[in-house]
Image (cartoon, rainbow, N blue to C red):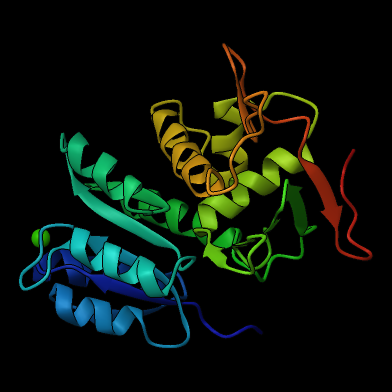
Length: 248
Ligand code: CA
């Protein structure tokens, strides 16, 4: 049996923290508690952590700062933020900072576990075809979650960005709808989830890719197809690792 997945729970309200810890333990995970942002960052950076559940309003260091700091060292560690009902600005800000998903408080155990499972399902243990792409002089490696620039520099991709790129590559030549990306990348089939979240991840991905400037024709690597969704630009070349099957 594979080792238990370790999940850091960063939440200052003891009742909520213990509730989440109990839910996770019952479901077979190994929760680690952190009652403030400083401790949360420290625990999240330890080896062997599979996912972080991060409250935003925290003593010492708030959740936004924890997320920003964590992304500097752990670009692809899955993070789900815990936000208050109605706090849409917080969700948007958290997603912009690189959170993979969010759960709105108060949440049911079923909802929490569904989000956790969906995010973990995409983790590197999944034997799915890995994809490498050439975008001009840049090579995107979706397995390693990084862009290799022409000058040898590397830019880290978040897990979500790498997965979005990979999904678009697997369905290349066609526009992929936001709803389809939500369900395949995030594992969410709930119509209430804002597809705008996808747009924000695409924007961040485009910003990282824009280090590689579009050519004179103004070509885009990720094209917006009005009313349909997103697709990879025709100039993107899909490279595959030996033996990896990639759907046409
Ligand atoms: Ca709090």
